[in-house]
Length: 376
Image 1 (cartoon, helix red, strand yellow):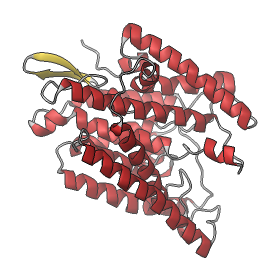
Image 2 (cartoon, rainbow, N blue to C red; image 1 turned 135 degrees about the horizontal axis):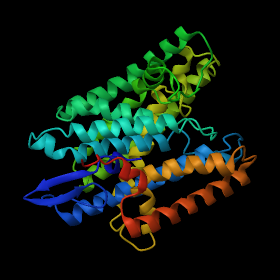
Image 3 (cartoon, helix red, strand yellow; image 1 turned 135 degrees about the vertical axis):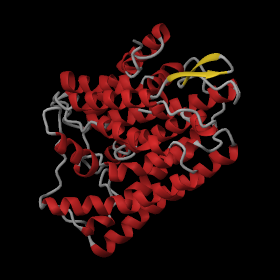
Image 4 (spheres, rainbow, N blue to C red; image 1 turned 180 degrees about the horizontal axis):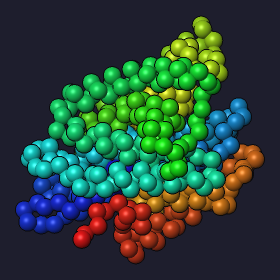
């Protein structure tokens, strides 16, 4: 779910009211360019949605080629979501940064509260998925004071977080003295438990997941319409993808696989959602690579792509919807790869049909509407 849609609000440019966000552009940067660029981001978000659905439906086991290919999005789709969120944050606060206007605190805090409440509530249904929305809420809150921070500082913070965050995570797990637990928190838990889960111990700890978000904020300040920029994203993204994975393979070959109990040996792994630096390097690299490739595509506004783009535009709605489909229809399955592929295809098609029809008729999705600050 990209914050490009999460942070929609009314902007004023030369007296004209513009919806800053999905499929809309700034009059000063060129409507045709901005629309094209946003469509590429919508496409990336749509692919992240599809990858997320495949991962969450499962199954995740097996070593056959088809099973390995099926679970390729594991540990990558969610990183792409967060990276896009950082990009959207920078794009939507560009006027605040460049013209030193007031930070839209009311809109930001409203979205933080809504995402936190919805995210905790979504942990209750029996879908078997760790919900990322509370981490999104905390990332938005973290990013707000950095809206006017220098770009170099963002990239430095992203690097520090990628290196230091996993060490903090390991220390916290070692202090707990137990095997890795991914148990989610809900609205019924204490504030301290929720805070500890979001910052340190949960499946999406802020100390680790700040890295892709901050990198996304830095990318959002670059000239994404430039062919040079997208080429660099492809080159550096591919290099990081391969380097992170290769380094992990070498370390594991020398020192062996990490133990079940979390310790310093875990630093050698690049397994998805391991919270480790080599996974971050490889996973974020693949996200940057994919985004660079999508930005190279010149024409997204084709009739046969519009339903898929609608899925990206209404990603928050699609995210919530797929969790209810999981809980009501799919669980406790699937039992094998064929069942998983069929369930994934059916879920994606159902959400594409719903989002495309809704967007064509009403525009902004139902969950996206909830994110708008109510007018009193």
